Image 1: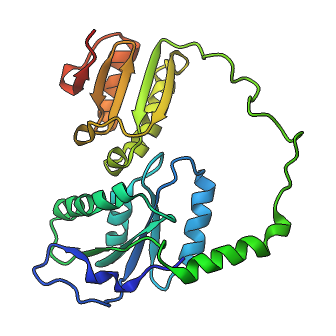
Image 2 (image 1 turned 180 degrees about the horizontal axis):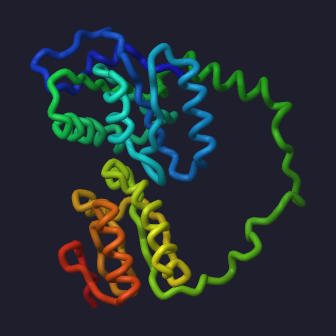
Image 3 (image 1 turned 180 degrees about the vertical axis):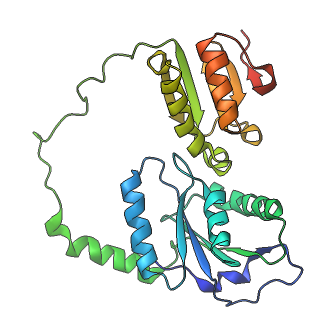
Amino acid sequence: MTADPTAFSKVLTRSPDAAPAGTTPDAVLFLVSQPYVQGRRLKALEAGLAAAAPVPCAVARMEGNGAGPMTALDQLVAGGARKILVQPVGIPFSDSLFAWLPGALAHWLRRCGRDDLRVALARDQIGDGALLAALARSAVARAGEAREIGPEAGSLDGAGWDEVPAYRHHLLVCSGPRCHFREAGPLRTVLAEELRRQGVARDCLVATTGCLFPCNNGPVVAHYPAGRWYRLHDAGAVSRFVSTVLRDGGTLPELIIHEVTQ
């Protein structure tokens, strides 16, 4: 999968002079929209792209756990990148995400406050006939490696998935693209660590969700049965939420963005 260097004809920039069409980027950020992909698979993808790309590159998820796109962009800039091509990975990539990305990248540019950065957003590869042909040929050529599945291979109903786990607190952690852009992925890890550290992990059923909608107030965690939604914007807020709300039974009004009313 190759990035399209001519994508610099569509540039998001803080400089008044847009980069000319055909300008070769000095780094590529590949954005993956696969919320359930495992970390080792993501690392394998990054290693393969890094070996093939003619310029430095990074891979970031659009949803799920791990660092988000802004952290990856920051790291590319810290490594010397000034002309960054953002390449969505997916055939096809989500239309709604693609429509939202220019604003999100513009937000990152404003946050950086630098005039020497140029960012271009490439199209996905749904129109790349050569890539689609290569994918189809590869599927047929590797058919011998496929695992044959028979009726005895397993069951839709796995063992241990019949009962609801015991818990006192149900936490819905938004991992949608907008919250993930605001680094909800690392905060999910911090939350798990805090639950263990403060001794309440066994009392909590934590579920990662898609978009919960109040994206501008993210990262969002909804707490039930209390029915309060919190904005946990950093590790300190997570720690206070665990100690004050979950462990001690209090509230944090300054972090509440919504309350469910009967």
